[in-house]
Length: 160
Image 1: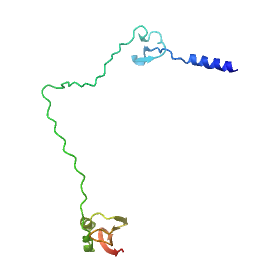
Image 2 (image 1 turned 30 degrees about the vertical axis):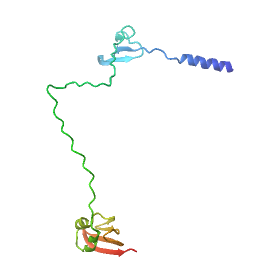
Image 3 (image 1 turned 90 degrees about the horizontal axis):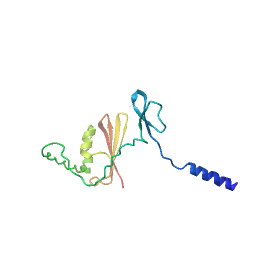
Image 4 (image 1 turned 120 degrees about the horizontal axis):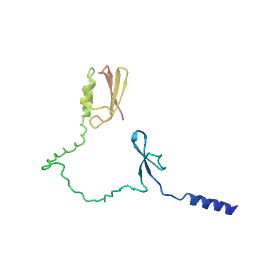
């Protein structure tokens, strides 16, 4: 039994050895050439590669570059790219301005004076913005409540 398995395995390995592939160029539908691995039907053979092998062009690879003029005359000057813009620095807002908020101010006025809120949320036609303690307004949390885009109430809480 052991020898039978070895015989079958060696037979399978010998049978699976690579063979040379044949390529046939035949006339396909509408006269278009097709390439296949089996012989062409009678009268449709366009080329027998075993008798007439294809020409192969080998172009050596080179790391050297040569300049090939694409048009007559000198090349135009390249316009240098403008330098990348530096990232914008965030504007510094005076936290002491929080004391001067009044009812009736618009959201835009509040944002212009105090900057964006540290926390904020909207509900329906209203919104509430929270400004946490900062250097100009230490230990104070300022809550601004808006109604239809206008300051409705300002609450200031001292945190110790």
